[in-house]
Amino acid sequence: MIEKGVNYADEYAKRVRKKPKEYPKTIRDAVDRYYRWKKRKDIWFDVDKANEAMDFMESFIRHVNGDLAGQLLKLESWQKFGYSQLYGWQRINEKGEAVRVIREVYWQVPKKNGKTLIAVGGLAYAMYGEGKLGVNTFCCASDYTQAQYAAKPYAAAIINSEPLYDVSKIYKGKKDTIEAIVYKFTIDNITFENDFKVMTKETDKIEGSNPYFVLNDECHVQKNMNQYDNFKSAMINRDEPIMFNISTAGRGTSSVGMRIYKEAKETLKKDDDDTRLVLIYEPNKGYEWDDRDVWKMVNPNIGVSVTMEALEMAFKNAKKSNFSKGEFLAKHLNLFVNSNESYFDLDQVEKCLIETTEENQEILKEFNDSLEGEMCWLGLDLSKTTDLTSATLNFPSHDEYGNPLLKLKQRYWIPSDNLDAREKEDNVPYSELVEQGHVELCDGKMINEDMIVESIKEWMNVYDIQKVNYDPAMSATLIPKIENLGLECTAVGQYPNVVNAPITDAELLIYQEQIRTDNPLFVYCASNVVITKNLGGMKAASKSKSVKKIDGFISFIIAHKETMFEMEHFDDDELEEYLESIYR
Image 1: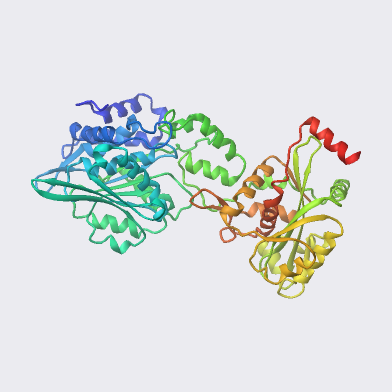
Image 2 (image 1 turned 135 degrees about the vertical axis):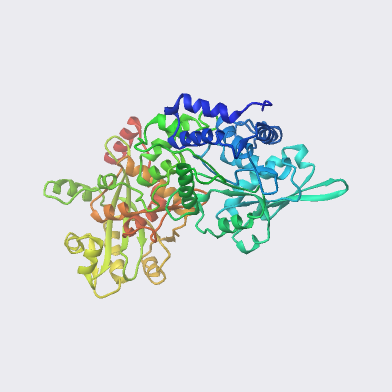
């Protein structure tokens, strides 16, 4: 409950000053800025206006998801610190009227810290609670789908608030998406409309829109500045507009979010822009990413919507690969990270390789002998000229303790033309790998498909090939030849919804050191992989973003779409029965 006359910004600021080590430097800087502003004569803090906004939010906005679903919003102290300043700081404009000082918010918090509901509260107050007539509010994001992550909770909050829903009309599009919300009301027999619209990439429609409140959600995934810049330009003639940027950090340095973030940090450092409120929860310099105190410091809603147990689970997963670590840093520690980080650490993948050395000759012989006559699944990633063509045979197996073990046999094909230049560019000794039998050279500038067919024939005499999975790109002429050998062939497109599961399983196998291969090119390809994610969080390996070749990893994943279902763990009794069935 918001109490009349209480300065909630003061309460939080005092708490930060009392125990500064528990808060990020960026928040300590925001508190220092608050105290500097309190000493100024040209602006003042209006407690009543600040509390009126927060009281509206706590009276009308309900949680619609999670354990608190159905309950009225209860703002936490850190949220009150932000909202109090947004609505509390006042100045006199040229007309002699008291208006808000702040026109833009940059609020950056990690995932699961109630970010969406913060945005919903601001939207609802602008549209319903502030008493403004004929206002236009907007939600914009990287695309229409992303905007729905804020628009749907906003609509749900209105639906679940009878006083708001009774005076509103919600317009829906395909698949129950939210397109617009209209609040119609009458004062002194004059009818007014306040509305909310989901903005798409059609930035030309922004001109003339006269926006009052713009929610700019998840700036870190936006690549085009036009929408942001056009909205700011369209707001210039209003006395009290709000550009409400709220985001988690992300990958890459070219996003809209990174530009706004850098501008916000400059504002925090120099305190030279009164129109902008900056609240960033990020680790201090020299932080340790496994320090639990750092986790608590940057997740202000810890113990409310974020639990240490959930962070521990995310951290455990983050240790599996570079990519997963980047996800943890971006989503849970709120740090911008390089978008081109490789998915795996090199030292992780190197543990998969049985190196071709004098000392390993017996181990290599045992490895190869163990595969003869065994069931396997074949994955093909094809090319014509510049890329490697790769074939991977996946053999599901077990180690001596009954743990799943995936053995890989790989072969690569590469054109012989300009081989010296290829070796220098890729930093790979292809000639040496040809001598070792890991790579075959195709005369000229093109891959010879007949050589691939001959290799498959050779393998059919040695191994029990169950099925061939292949990337459909450039496969039109080769696959019919393979089918004529009597093998079942299935296309496996490189789409997140197709390859997410085998990639996730492969990550676990590599982390647990449950993959073995004798081909060093697998290490090379796997250590080059860069992963992209779709909006649903599903993963795919990206050839365009991976600087070096990843074809050997792709062929492995294509085959693993089958073998991930063949990997079983035996306990001691089951292992004994399994071994007896083999050697009986």
